[in-house]
Image (cartoon, rainbow, N blue to C red; front, side, top):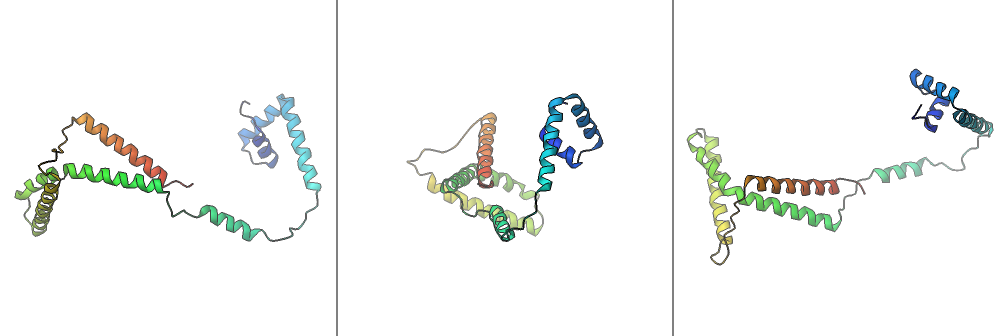
Amino acid sequence: MKDFNEDLLHEYLDGMLDDETRQAVEAHLASSPAARAQLAELEALFSSLDTLPELPLGRDLSAAVVAEIGQEMAVSTSLPRWLWGLLLGQALIALLLLGNVWTSLLDWLGNGRDIATDWFATFQLSTLAWLREFWVQITAVWQQPNLPNLSIDLPTSHWALLFGLALLVWLAGNRLLFTAD
């Protein structure tokens, strides 16, 4: 038996093994003198432990154990300062990426006016038109004559690489945010 260990011997002595594993352990004990010696040593240890008298505890430990478990189970609400910086950086990058495609997204949604026939769709389209105008006014501040144009024309593979890297940074940030210390 190649994965024979002391845990199997303990389970064998406690009678906790299934029939197949128990038979494999018994076969290994029959063929290995070292395993038989280890079993005899454990049996002697358990029999000597059984002869010891039971002593009552001097104090009740249950309150201390429950308090310790409560401390281990408590969720920390404060985050390290560098983690807040990482979270802020991720939010800023997400806003920049959204801002880069926002006007084209609004143009694409605005071309569906022929399809919109009910009042809710009309309300949505007017809201989107207002948002589009608002975004144009906001970005007009960014596009001062002395500033360069911030258009980003990248091939699809570069966009995929950028989104993949953003996803990896996002996943790493979430791993750091949602794991216990």
